[in-house]
View 1 (tube, rainbow, N blue to C red):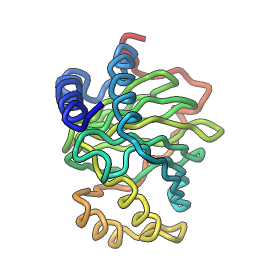
View 2: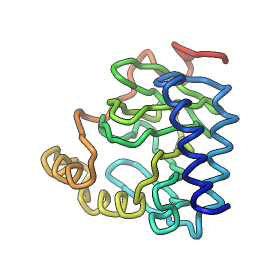
View 3: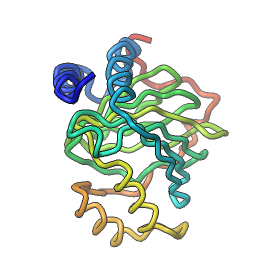
Length: 205
């Protein structure tokens, strides 16, 4: 598949999907997610593993910047129990599919739980965050539309927050360079989102 086809596919499927399913959990989205995931895998020439210990994050990037030219970037992540990123926003649409475990998401101020097979879409510019509420590592496949230099971003992120305590000032300065606005602390597992409790909101489950 050539780069032109890759870019056209990401725009054709990604944008309407983001508008329709913004901020919701939706199993029917899995079909479209698989199409975009396969496009990203075809465009990927290598896989890069990166670890961000301060965020309890391990990830693999499947579509580095030099192979995409703006189409779609795929990363596969593993989050330690109780960990997730600071609440933030960026220009790219981000599409999550939970592979293992359970996550508490917050999208545009609304909180809900996502489980294996659920797809969550966050349009560009929308404030969001998530946290692994399982008692074991949890994993997601994540698509960025349009793509970004995920290898560079996460490598520099790991270098910026080397200690367990995240310095908000340093994080904001880092985010400014990458077009990411960090607007709040990471979400925390709350009592009413323990792994034994059912999801509070599910669509088309």
